[in-house]
Image 1 (cartoon, rainbow, N blue to C red):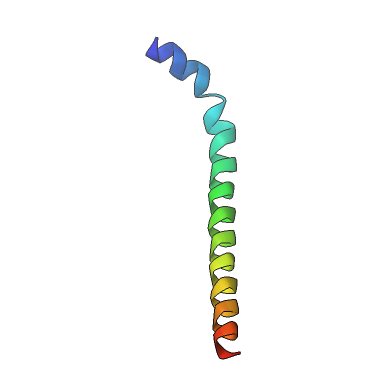
Image 2 (image 1 turned 60 degrees about the vertical axis):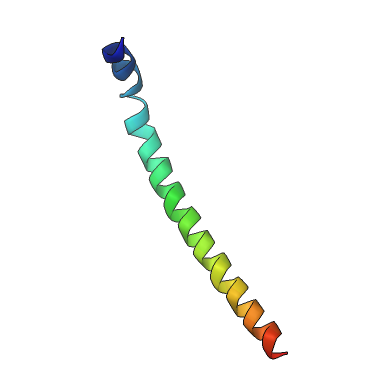
Length: 49
């Protein structure tokens, strides 16, 4: 059954999922980095004011 499940899932998931997951992880990391940077800048500016 493991061979059957792998044979059934492998053609679909490796073709589609890694592209979406890879791009998704990159975009999530980029958005989190931007959010943290913007938050730090806003906090720094507010601290000065």
